[in-house]
Image 1 (cartoon, rainbow, N blue to C red):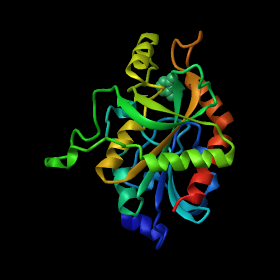
Image 2 (cartoon, rainbow, N blue to C red; image 1 turned 60 degrees about the vertical axis):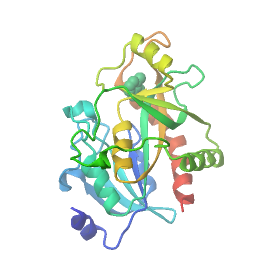
Image 3 (cartoon, protein in one colour; image 1 turned 90 degrees about the horizontal axis):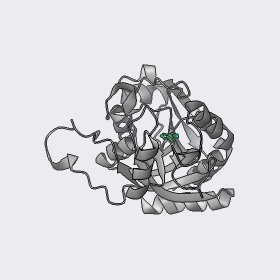
Amino acid sequence: MNEMIARRAPGFRPKVAVVLGSGLGGLADQVQAVATIPYGELPGFPQTTVGSHAGRLVLGHAGSTPVAVLQGRAHYYERGRPDEMKVAIHTLAEIGCETLLQTNAAGSLRLDMPPGSVMAITDHINFTGVNPLFDAGPGDGRFVDMVDAYDPALRQALLAAAAAAGVTCHQGVYIWFSGPSFETPAEIRAARVLGADAVGMSTAPETILARHVGMKVAALSLITNYAAGLVPGKLGHEQTLAVAGAAAADVQQLLRTFLERYT
Ligand code: HPA
């Protein structure tokens, strides 16, 4: 597969891999593309079932930084496999990516972080009870250290990029729930007690997979809604897409600034 990528983008060696979450796929247009490869041509890459996830790998430049953009991810809830993104992340590491920059749509557990907010992830809580390294084979490599899994220096760079782009960027802990049903209000109350600031159905497994292969990780949540029970009303994926679409320009500007400054 790496040969296949090399054939489509000869000599191209990306430094940063970017994962675009729900409603954020348009960010790929920011990249001066060298090659665009549908996941279908990349064996082992996820077959995404979420409509807003295009399922394409875009190789190109953001400023002078060579990047690989994953337009769409697969989630644990799609097939009940927590290592759904393993091949994609291993491939990105093998073709040169030293950093995995993730984006996602998430619910807010904080009234001072309303829909439309952006949050840099400082740490995560895996609330699913599963792990993408369950089947990672024997040996001690699977006992991956998760202290500073979200790289502090990269987070500072994200915050600096946000300031330069004029975007307010919160910081907080992301809690991974399996989905696909949204959380109950009681689960969200529990998550608040546990110390979570935002909730979602992705990102944590990719972070674990990336740390396993030695990539640095940075992650941004785009808050699309208050989590269940925080305010009156019901939750739905349409809201996720509508708010993500509306606030995507902020995230786009922030990411572009971050990537262009990346050294
Ligand atoms: N919960 C889980 N995942 C989400 C949410 C939420 O409230 N909003 C966007 N993705």
